[in-house]
Image 1: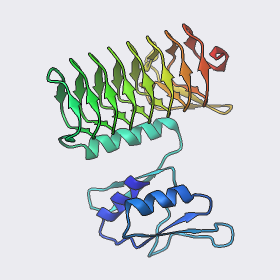
Image 2: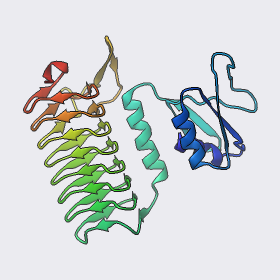
Image 3: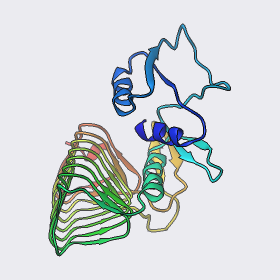
Image 4: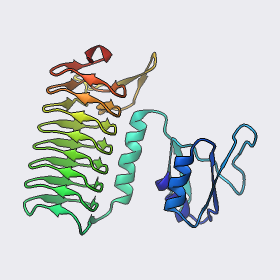
Length: 267
């Protein structure tokens, strides 16, 4: 939401007021704190329907606002997890243009930073790491000794342990990825914990498009590279291998040493 409003404010039109449906006070408070010059209010969508007109625009929560070549804003709706991952990687590609390292950080002298990268305050990059941009390391995040982080977003207080590889992935707040894990083309939800030797495979052996199960429907992602969607508050045992395009429900506990293909792999 913050990103979307920032992109709208970059455009030629002035944003004076933002309306949220009732029950989304947290979102409204976040926008008000981030943009004190913008009026923020709530409305009852049942009694006061709002429609986009000449002087207003409706932006769903599940959307990404980007600037077009002509300077106008383009709104893309996000329906599936791989679209969310794609949107996050697009933001990295479009907006992380240089190396920016906050003052209150620890970046080891033996670490290598290649390409554009943003490292926020309190973050730590240990010895013999490589950060290959575009990449983003949030406040208080950590990358352990000998790890590789490439084209990825590491959120606030998330940590990557010893000898890991995280590629083209989004890692949410307070995630703990321990050691010798390989996380590729994946989404890892808030406060999840991954034990050692966990891997998300991201390519089918026949190199066909990866399919993803949504309810009872199996959807073609249109991608040949897509890993796992691990929800928030999950615990993943040592040696777990996720097959491509697998979904892990919130709060799951996955027993060690399994090849995860469905919910039968959980404790």
